[in-house]
Length: 142
Image (cartoon, rainbow, N blue to C red; front, side, top):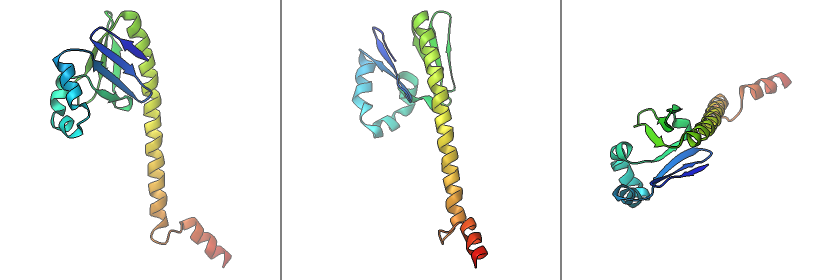
């Protein structure tokens, strides 16, 4: 989903939200450091305060819409995003992003569970690479 406004563009992807400015000094600064990850880390606090950014959907706490159409994206440990939209646009956007956030959080949780299961399996194999179940089967056969 993409919403194109006179001063910014909102792009809602399957796994993240991207807000880009179209014009002005802020846009020029944003573009200047966009490809430089070291500079982005060094200036991350400034960017959190003043520049739109990419936000992974799994990191979003909530998305709410005011009556005037302003969308508030709540991000823990970062400054909230406030996106001024028309009420109809805002309604569609909030519905879609909330749907995608839930899917992305479910996927991240499943990945975490799968990772923990793999870790436990590796720990149970120990140094020999044989599971406790395989050891039991071997003893039973003998």
